[in-house]
Amino acid sequence: MAVYTDVNEAELASFLADYDLGHVLALKGIAEGVENSNFILHVDSGYFILTLYEKRVDEKDLPFFLGLMEHLARHGLNCPQPVRNRHGSALGRIAGRPAAIVTFLEGMWDSRPSVRRCAAVGEALGKLHRSSAGFALSRANALGIEAWPSLFAEARARTGEVHPGLAGEIAKELAYLEGSWPRHLPRGVIHADLFPDNVLFVGDELSGLIDFYFACTGELAYDAAICVNAWCFEPDGSFNISKGLAFFSAYEGVRKLSASEIDVFPVLARGAALRFALTRLVDWLNVPADALVHPKDPLEYFGKLRFHQQIGNARELGLLR
Image 1 (spheres, rainbow, N blue to C red):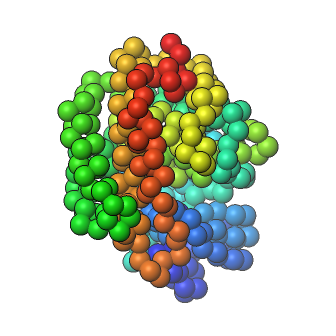
Image 2 (image 1 turned 60 degrees about the vertical axis):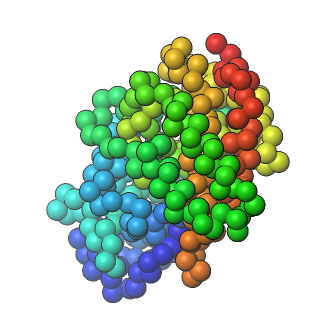
């Protein structure tokens, strides 16, 4: 979430004329993330999120994202729900961008999640994977392994600005992953970005999952690897095995990982670390100077990648079967 495109009063009034939400009381930009322009919209009928879709979101993918949120809610997962206008559409345009309004969820995200909260997200991810099986639409992963070489090419000439020798390290890891990546694991709809800032809690109770704009069809275990990287490391870069144990135990309470998924999980964790290291690297080098956004440090994920390069099997991450 971020703000790249401003919305003026006249544009907002014209857009909302198609909705039955009442008068606008306030519109406030959200200064987090790097993908879309997001605002808290306060109207007579309550609070909502207004999203303007920016460069990385292909407009043709929006029915997938919005339809997935509706599907998951019907299967018991609490996530934002698209608000449809008087014409029955969840999509419109404002300030030259495709845009949607979704419901506002109560809760706070946690920058240092506890073991209990890691278990809660493991259970939620398992439910997401299980309930999304009946979703009719599909979408290729635009940031899957096939995209990583082009991300590297985009940043390669300037990697020395971030850390000396980084280009060689990335090239070596890409070669390893291209030769080792599993091609026949169980697949389905994945969130692909279930970081702590996309999970809300009220107390220790998980109150909702948000930001489905990387969701796609992919390897289910890869989605779990993304979560392990995002939830089970401490701020100093160390891996917390208790969090790993809690995450996997809760996930497998809903969906058991196959033997093949367990065998290759360290490879998936390396790939998940490299994917976010690369996109953070590109954003670090290219986020516009005037954007109301805080780019995330790519070196955090290169550190996680180096950790996984030393891992021999999934047991070292807390997956004990």
